[in-house]
Image (cartoon, rainbow, N blue to C red):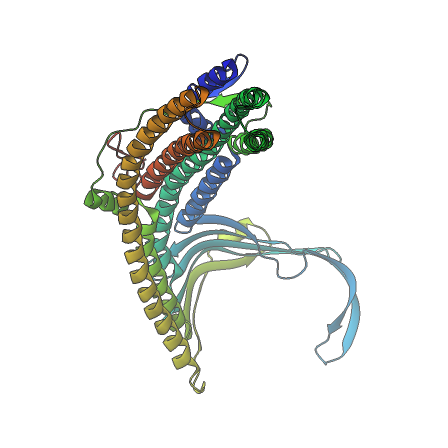
Length: 487
């Protein structure tokens, strides 16, 4: 009987810390997971990658200064080369030449047209080492415009899409942190369930051992049958097997939690059951409004529509290849660098290039029709995704309200089942009920305890799912990501 009382005390207070062990609350587990878990490091790295992708996009519109090699041929040549003479003959002549060239260019993309405007200073130097002659050729000032016509403009479409993509990444980060919380809660309760199962199995082992001793005594004095004694002995053997399995399950669940949290040491730990449930009401319309304001998936609908329009524009822009190039500058030639800037000559040119298919056997039509069809398909998919988005939010809200009620029911059931088992145990000890009815009460007690822990797990996972789906903390009444506050 003393064994039963001791194990019963251990079951009623299953989450008191053991000396030398760390005790973690659910908030502790979430905090550790959000700061040192492998999942957190992945989310943090993904956030950094998307930030630098956005910075790369922004630099596409800024002017760039480039230093470009502009050699007319090899930088240095020392060889015997065939040289064609004025009469058409070939003469092999030793050549020893140094011929460097540089272009200092300031380039500015034109985002409205997709062209490129550049300001250049071009210098070339020629040194015929064999003949001991030198010469400079340069364009101190040159302005060049390269403008495609009727073409796809990637700068224009990036201006529309990339800011949305970057905003998505910031919201994805907030959702990722809530996903970590949800997974942490799942692993947390997996360990709690394993702890409870172990405590239940240990209690049942001690209980069945005591009952076996009682039945054995009754059998010796002839007040019970051998069949009942064997039934109790079989139950005792099963209890020992349950303890071994529960210990293994607890070790496995603890290792999974330790790995997820990023714990490096192997110190033992226990978990503290979250006994307080946050009290708040969730309105379906409010939840849907918060989700539309904060979720990355919602603004992704706009981004996907723009990408479909972009694909159509790109298909149409590739039908013709027409480009205008114009240049104006001043150039000169001289024996020294200084002579290049004395009375330079005017240099200007313009060019129009085009590549227009005249007969393509319907290729242009097929390309544009394909892009149009893909756009319509994407519009249908996005429309369905918008409906699914709203349904997911509404379903989660309704499920959450049901789970709050389920906790109250399972908690009361746990208390009733515990009291019923205590009564059945006392009645068994005085011989008022047989071992079968006692086992029924024991099974109901264990089931009620497990159902209560499972209800807590379902509630807290649903709570963090709701936070992830709306990026809003209804318990605190605040945004988990506020798009209206600039960072």
